[in-house]
Structures are given as structure tokens and as C-alpha cells.
Image (cartoon, rainbow over all chains, first blue to last red; front, side):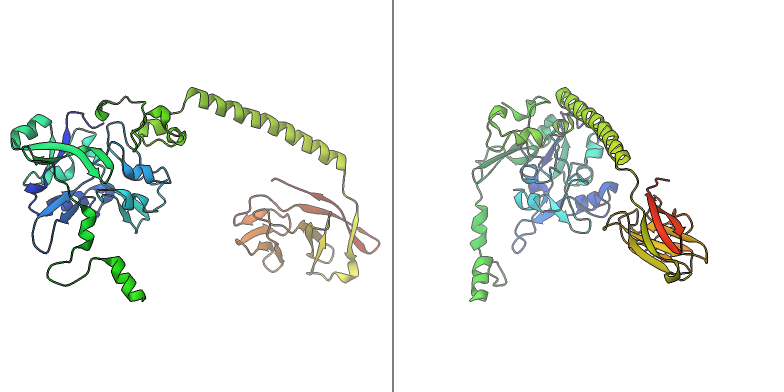
Amino acid sequence: MVPQHLEFFIDPNRCIGCQACVQACAECDTHKGTAMIHLEYVDRATSTQTAPVVCMHCDSPTCAEVCPADAIKKTEDGVVQTARRARCIACSNCVLACPFGVPKMQVEVDMMMKCDMCYDRTSAGKKPMCATVCPSQALFFGTREQIEALRPRSAPMNEFHFGRQTITTKVNMMVPRYGRATYVDVTAAMDESTHGRRVSLDVFEEAMHTES
Amino acid sequence: MNPRNRERDQLCLAPNGSPESEQPAWRKDFPIDWPQDHYVARRDFTKFMVLVSLGLTIGQFWIGFQNFLRKRRGKPAMMKIAQLSNVASGSTVVFHYPAAHDPCVLVRTGPETFVAYGQKCTHLSCAVVPDLKSDCIHCPCHEGCFDLKSGRPTAGPPRRPLPIVTLTIRSGAIYATGIQERTT
């Protein structure tokens, strides 16, 4: 069981895109060669900023809600486990449903695999692999007091709004302590044109043109 | 209520935020929480035990009843398979015994020796083919083999021997007098 006083804090501001977390994650024996952490480029055309994405371990996990095979379970310490091997039917419902884009379908093994906060390590009181190697502490695993002492200008936040869905998570995101809440319209990005090359992001419009 | 302080036995909060009592019953049957998923109520366990023992008891009576019916039915009637002169040594005859849908096969293994077995493989009821060259009865479906002399399985998936047909030779003809299902 993961100790209650230890928590995961993500500070994407501090990410330097070194990929150490990806390499460390891929080294783990429970899913050897495949990293469960995603290092996302925020806006690759204009910025080098990256953001690590680990499972946020929602209190009411959407991936588990949509699973038709009852394969995703949450342990009592709040960790949403990866798909049960015997139950997962590789339907990709969770992949589509997760608002954070965490579960990924592993087609080689026909199973969904996702970050389980290194349950083998954290349940024994150790840090997750990614948090042990992160040189800038963008991924931090420790107590609330520790993070407050380290980041006096940031505050942990664990409530997210996606449309009308409010999600509270076990994993905390570090946000500016004295700023206002940020609202990002994710669907608005679909109308955006890309920089550099003229590629339409509106896939529906493109499909309509090719059909006619 | 702070979701972090929830009790162990409480279900995961539904996406609409409604309390446990207002949630549909399937949420209890397919809980997201690991401890709930592994939890077996005493009442459910007792129900399972009672139903299984009831099933076993009824099954015993059913087997006894079937045995009684089988004994009452008696031996099937004697049936002529073929004239001896029509069955050359080393040849086979397919016949149906005791009913019209029970295929059997008669093999004349030597000048004076006959064997007859049910033709359904004891694995998945494929039709078996006697192979006199290799002294076996071969099932082509899953490469099963039975001994030609005894009908006992020698290779492949079948575990039970073929049912043996008892034979009688009377005045130049060969008759089937009974069929014997065997387990070993």
C-alpha cells in the first residue's frame, strides 16, 4: 500500500525534455522496453517546452467507468491499476475516454497498459522510477511539506474540469500559487492551422472534400 | 466529503456524484474498487454453497435414474451385419448398430478374426478409419489412434476406448449381439 503521506507532484514548468523519465520507465521489468510515461511537446512548432504525462489516478476514473470488461481497478490507496491481463479485451474504450490521454493500446500484446505509479515500488515506500531520475524535479514524489518548502510560489492542485465533468485526482499538478485558474478550450485547437506547413487540422472538412 | 477520507467498503464515487443508494445495481456487481471486486459476502458464499450441493445431489439422483432406465431397456436386439463370404480378409464393413444413427465398423483382421467398434471417436465424435497396415484405428480430425485389437487409445487426444461391439458367427453370417461402452 502506498503510504498516505507520500504524494506525486508534477510541475510541467520545470520539465527540460531530457527523456530521463521515459528511459527509466522503459527499464522497469514489469513492462520492459515500453515506457508508460509520455513526454508531450506542448506546441512543437513554436516551442521546445515539454510536459511529462503520467496517470493522474482519478478518484472516479473515467477509464474504469467505460471499461466493458471490468479490467481496470482502483486499489484502496487510490492508485488506478493497469488493465488486468486476464480481463482486458483490447477494445480501446479507455484510450478514447481518458481526459488526460494516459492509457495506450499495446497492439503487440493486445492489451491496454498504463502508468500505475510504479505500484511495485511505491507500495513498498519507494519513489516511482520517473521521480527518482528527473533532474529538474518536474516529477516529484514526497510529502506535501517537502514540496511546499521546495516550491513556495507554487501550489498543488488536483481538480480538473473537462466540459461539465469535474475530475479530482490523486496526483497533483503544480500551478502558480497566486494566479487565477486557467481555462483551455481543447476543442478550439481543432480549428487552428499549424505553423510552418499549411496543413489543415480540420480532419472532418478534409474528409468531406475528398469524398465530393 | 473529501474523497480521500472515504471508507474502505464504500464504492468509487459515480461520475454524476450521486450517493451509493441512488446508483444502479450494476455498480455494486462490477465495482471499480479493488477491495470491493475481491469481496465475497457471507450470504453470497452461502448461496453458492447451497446451490452447488443441491446441484450435486440432484446430479447423483439423475445418474441413478439413468442407470435404472438403461438396465430396464435391456440388451439391444441381435442384428445381421453381413454374410461371411462378402467380407474379404483385411476389409471393413460399416454398419449401424444398435440404432440407425450409431455408425459402427467391422474389420476382418485375419481369416477367422473379426473386431467391431463404434465408429465415433471418443474425443469429439469424428468418424474413425481402421488402418490395417499400421494396426490401428485412426481418427483424422486430431490424429487420434486406437489399438485395432482392443479399441484402446494409443495416441492423440482421445482418452477413452471405442465402444466394442460383441459379435457372433452363425451359419455363414456375422451378427452384432451387443455394444459395450467402456471407460478404461
